[in-house]
Image 1 (cartoon, helix red, strand yellow):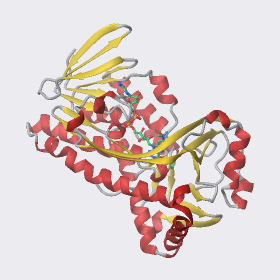
Image 2 (image 1 turned 180 degrees about the horizontal axis):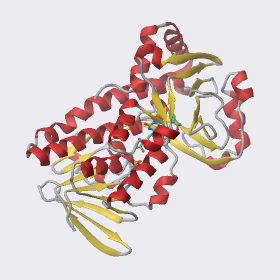
Image 3 (image 1 turned 60 degrees about the vertical axis):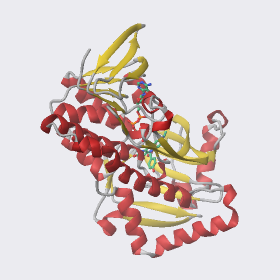
Image 4 (image 1 turned 90 degrees about the vertical axis):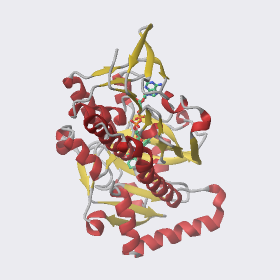
Length: 389
Ligand code: RFL
Ligand code: PHB
């Protein structure tokens, strides 16, 4: 089999890249290790920056988002029960869109299926070859049968645990990492959200987040220890813990019910450099991880593939390698700014047992500064809603 661009991974990064290329008449094949149903069953991000919203619309996959997505013009920060609203619209004239990653992925899969472009699900033992040359290859097995794809480029969009970054010789890649001593326990429930806006709460028992997927489906998280097991968290224990971390009025108003999904995600900051190795390019979680506190992961994946897609389109259209040569440097600038913001939001809102009472006072001062400073609120707003490309 032959294609122009082999894309590894059918998450939001791989599917969006495939769509951008298809719109420009460039052929791609997507190889995905799991089934489409499995990919759609993973509950992840919920917040889209304006830039991601625009990308989905321009890609012709914004119609359902525009009906079902919920525009949000601010967030609530809660610190030991005291609430402070950050009004994005008033501070910087922007908003974000609450629309689940599952729905984004679904919409991108539908448009790809309709286009006839090839996606191979349940591809086993995907392996990358010869990407230090202009004639890279990808091999895999499907239903036990060995397969091969030749191509011009490989886009590694296969997430943090994927094969693409792992295929690069260790001495060719530098990695930067911080692992946080906690995770997020998340619950999805078919009950209306407790608040019209997201609530990010700091409490001495730990961080909590009240989010949503729709007017009838809520997503809640609590900070838990890094080695905590989901089996130890009955629904009752989760609701008690969540409510204990919110201000009493919010806790009182919360509608609870049987969880329809419950999982723990570890928190990590990670960046690989560079993001190009000959004919192989990394994008999305394959290239970097942010802790979810700033709602940046999916949005960064989108902005990476926006740049990568444009660079490939320029390469095929104008026979110019300038943009593909610039890809890694260009996107790393934005990635590091999102890393900084996600680290900062995480540092302000979570409980860090090792930083003691001094650390707590610094967090309190950070919150008080935000509450009293228009400049600090503008800074949070522009980072949360998305910095320019
Ligand atoms: P994905 O979504 O991980 O997709 C990678 C795909 O590659 C496949 N794959 C392979 N395929 C073939 N061969 C192999 N060897 C393969 N290995 C892996 C995988 O099966 C998968 O289908 O990466 P992508 O596309 O880069 O997208 C990144 C986003 O998924 C991620 O950044 C966000 O979910 C992060 N995130 C959030 N981001 C936001 O922008 N806003 C949020 O509100 C937000 N909340 C979150 C989050 C992530 C969370 N968790 C669970 C990590 C909340 C949570 C709890
Ligand atoms: C979510 O709804 O899953 C969500 C929202 C905001 C975040 C992280 C996760 O910062």
